Image 1 (cartoon, helix red, strand yellow):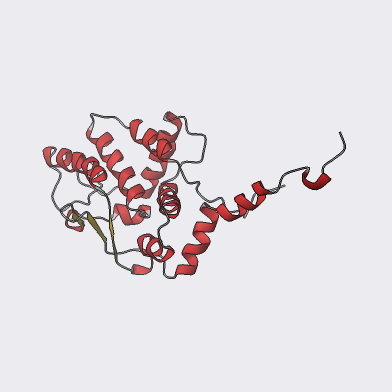
Image 2 (cartoon, rainbow, N blue to C red):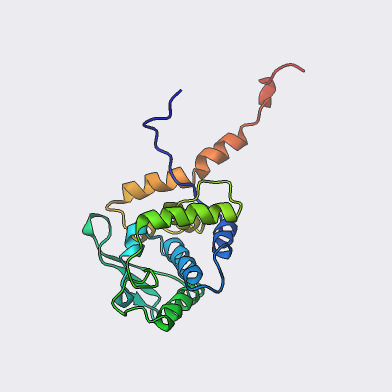
Length: 204
């Protein structure tokens, strides 16, 4: 049977798996610091890959923890926030690029010469790091966004808040998104129904 036409959604990664991805980056090289910072931004900010790659230094406000996405999907702007631990990772890259003399007007996530990164590189990077980290799942930048959404759902965050964080145009899209990522009601219902309950199982 052909898989042609089937859509495979990126899988959400656990916190341990994302941390393993980060650990697979070089801890000392500028590109390793950049790639860790990109992973953190995609993950904790729940950003799309293109949104992260379009960020400019003036879109980051460490004082408030805010990241401003000026051109999200549908050209919609929004503001998200990430916690201090995530900012610390980003700051390591910002310091490294300053030390390397990267032009101030270059995108936040750029080559060491200041040129923009492209999505093709990010796809390769995620696959490579996933293999180095020994992660059996399909590792993709969008999976980090999925991971953050699933985490917020587990924490009991309101669906409307999650919708704003993800930059969805309507909350119905977010609800379907969450149901795909975190089908807790379906799983609970199925686990509550045991094989063999009320004599319905096969004879020994």
